Image (cartoon, rainbow, N blue to C red):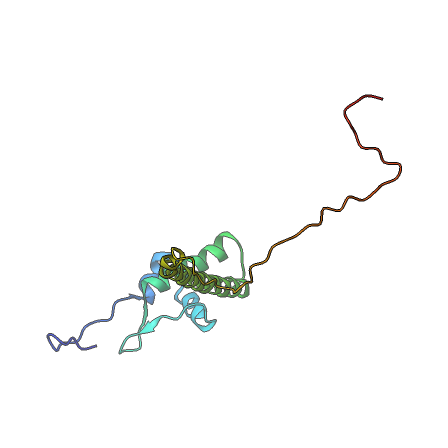
Length: 148
């Protein structure tokens, strides 16, 4: 990468495979296997050196926790990570929808004062009318408060 201000090459930020392997006490081949399986996707430098970002490190910590502490195999790890990504996406979608509803309510709250408001789902004004028909029930005596 070239820095616009000085015109010199800037090193991309990240941790090398050897530094990550040493820190987490795993073999470099294990990290390469995680990459082959699609569990990690480190970036590459100009010299094709794997560089692990902070996001890659956080994902690696989840992988190691699942495999070491919970005994999950790599297929299970892949499923769990995919589910986590889908849940994060669903949460983001929900948050956007909630913000949209909040904005909609804020815009339309001024309309409520004059009595003309729009609903998200149009409805008709309905009323429930219940007839006051008293049916005769032979043999059934009403309680009048007196004792028999």
